[in-house]
Length: 395
Image 1 (cartoon, rainbow, N blue to C red):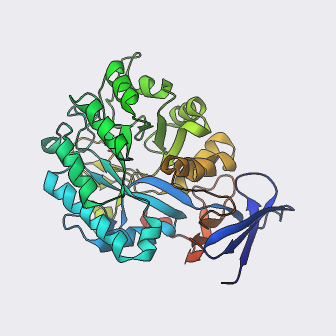
Image 2 (image 1 turned 120 degrees about the vertical axis):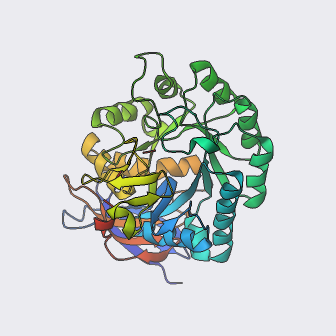
Image 3 (image 1 turned 180 degrees about the vertical axis):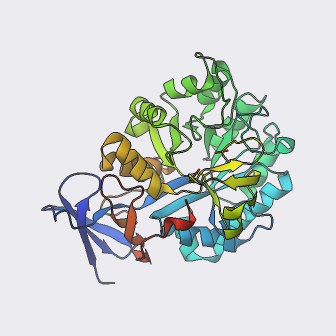
């Protein structure tokens, strides 16, 4: 294969950058003179650790099928996402297992899909049963963790289970955490009403993440202590946050970024499937009856709770760039930071897989606009993403 060089403004630093790609890998990263304002930015592909679905692709489809996952991979690439975790949410044991198996089948059936799918995130079913923290997860399927069920997930998708989100208030949470960690799975605290002591117990057992910190919570909390402060203050928990303009106010997001810093925070989309019928009102596989508001927030029709987001990480990067005044910080939080959570090989360095994003962005833009996306050195897309169908919004 002939080596190929891509050049642009360095999205993770200053000046210009040349990326040489050969045999699907980065063979060189070289600083070059700043190519000027008319040139695109260049940086690593985006990594999303929480994607329930996107457009017509749905990890929680009523009839799970590998094509749903392949469709997610294709459409997410249009928005600059080169790796992601399809996220299976709370449902009956049989339905959750079927969705996990469909992801495994998708990865085994397609090289292109296997390159994009970094594993599986299971969000639930051991979450809070309280209104607010539960979000739109179905109450009838909330249940304590069971080692037998966790083992069934591991057996259904060997090597693919990467993250499990649970609420530490359940009896057996610490034991479940130790079991998962022993099998190479990251455990995240989320959708919880747990006490400080219960959170500390699962962290001591090996939990290392917080799922969409600041969401999946009561509308009103004690000033202190509460489960948000407990997670924000815990240096052993890296927090995923949704920067879509709906889930977290600017002041809250800015505080979390400042508290956790680059090494303890990363962006997720929490995107859900949005077939054309849903944009006109309908039922979502995440939350049931939902309404897509004019401002792009997807809300449950009865409770008003956010039911996931219809925006992707291209919007999150622009949001954080606006909030912090630093594109480099924003790109890091959507690429190298979540890649560090996966910890499955070198990233954005010579020898690493060539996941490259060439994009346009200027201060004030609501999203970055991909020009070209390389996935393992192959062109995933050269078309600018059409964001009109994916306007924003949480469980």
